[in-house]
Structures are given as structure tokens and as C-alpha cells.
Length: 358
Image 1 (tube, one colour):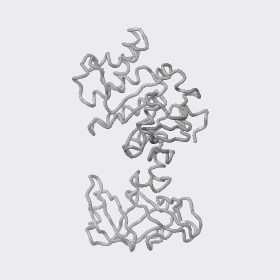
Image 2 (cartoon, one colour; image 1 turned 180 degrees about the vertical axis):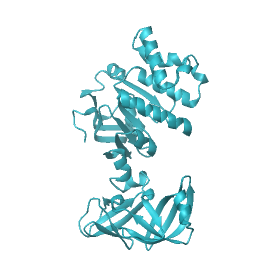
Image 3 (cartoon, rainbow, N blue to C red; image 1 turned 120 degrees about the vertical axis):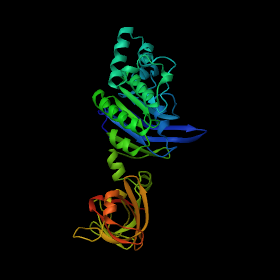
Image 4 (cartoon, helix red, strand yellow; image 1 turned 90 degrees about the vertical axis):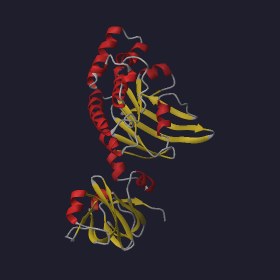
């Protein structure tokens, strides 16, 4: 867990109820100062509820939220002035782009000249200076989201709260917006909490990640660790770890699963103990012939599904079913089809081991 000195936002013993039912229960959660914490999880897991609590618009049934060690609800107005937010829906007011970006500063009583200079600066940072005089209703979705983010940064917040701000933008526009945002947030360094459902977004932007399932924290780690080394089977299934196999340790670093012998450099469970073994589909490679490396076994192709830049191949080896995502160019070179046999390869470093109940 992040040390107290590094934690800007802290959650302790938090419970939020709806209709008498707990929808969020967090014992302890720290959000590091100046870093981007991404909050991920399935629909209904409590992501937006957590963000609403941090915004002080949802009131906890119990627990505390602190900013720099001080209760956030002790002076809600003062706390909110230290924060800004942006959402999937830009929520721009019926006025010009310039006026929208200036609005947070105007509400804080900032003088006109300072408001204008700040707005002009952030419009330029987000590449939308030419939109300053345009009415908010005349903007495209991507333009509106850039204005929303410029407005969020204009007050130079200590804390930036974002609820899926890139989700409603078309793919080409979204990519450019994320690149610009990543550069700006790395320079401005607000403590950022970003709710997202997108794996690439979490990996691209997150310094720290929190995974919620059923209103509870199931794992906190660097984003890549959650996606590559999930804490348990529920986390593995959420992050798209298509291959999760029940197995047992047979010797040091070696496991038996579905009649296949697999080695792993991950943590080891007790000899004979049950375990879940998992590997991402893109980490499995296919070949026509085996070489001297570990974790190679023959498997029969039973289904082939094109998925854009990759081909998803479903294979069976004995009692072991596996899924591999193979780049299209590699697949074409292999020339495999349903019913063909191939050699599946898994690097021991890519085979993750999780404890399993007896």
C-alpha cells in the first residue's frame, strides 16, 4: 500500500448503501500524489460510486475520505475548490467555448484578465484555440470533450476526477485526445482518479490501478500487473485472461493441468496443492515444430475467429482447452486451419500461478 506520506487521497472503512444494501465497501485505499490512479471493474462494480464519494456528491453510510490527511467533508466548499472533474458527457453550458473554460475561475471570483489568460492557455494546450468563440452547441463530440478537459485544468486543480471521459469519442479522435491528455497530465501532475472500462486506456494512462468487483477492492497494483498477474480467478476473468486452468504443483515450479506439464517462474504453491494457472491469449505462440524451450505441447485447432489484427485460435490438447491470439501475418505464414495440429508454446515467465481453494 502507498505510504501515508505519498497518499494524497485516502479512503478508510468506507461503506455506501442504496436501498439498505451495501454497494461499496472499501477497507483501505490510497491514491498517490501526482499520479494517475485508474479505477477499473465490470459494470455495477462501484467505480462511479467511488468517484461520486470523492466528489462529495454521494454521502458515505460510514467511513472517512481524506485529502492531505484532513477529512474532505470538514469544509466541502474548500475541498471542492481543490478539485475538478470531467465526465463521459462533457456537460458544457449554453455559452461560448471561452466562457465555458473560464467558468470555474469566474465562480471562484478570479478577475477577468486572469480568467481569459488561463482559458487561452488551456485551449491552446488542448489544440482548440480556434474554437474559443464558437458556441458549445456547435461542437463535435471530440471538440466538446477537449473543451471539458480544458475547463477541468483551467483552475489548476490538485485533484482531477474523471469518469470515462474518452468513452463517447470516435476511435481516431479518441486516440489523439488520449495522447494530448497523457502529455498534459504528466506535466501538470494533478492527483488523478480515472474511471475507465478500457484496458488500453488503463495501461496507457495509469500509474496505479484499483480493480473493483461487487463494490469491493479485489486488487491494487500497477495496471500491467493486474492485467498480466491477476490476484484471483474473478480478476483474471475480468481482465480477459482467456486461459485459466485448474492444476496442481507436481515439482518445483512445475504443474500438471489437463494432462499437460507446464513450468512457471511465478510464485510456487505447496507440493501437490491446487492452483489456477493462467496466461493471456496473446502470450501463446504457435509453430509447426517444437524446439528446446520449455512448455511446448501439441494441440489441435478446433475453431478460428478473425479479430482485426489477430486471429483467435481455439485449440485442444488432451483435456486442456486453450485460446491463442496470433497476429494475422503469422497466422497466414503458418497456414493452419480447423483440424490441423500445431505446437503451442508458453514462456514460463508468462504462465501466472494463483492459489486455488481445495
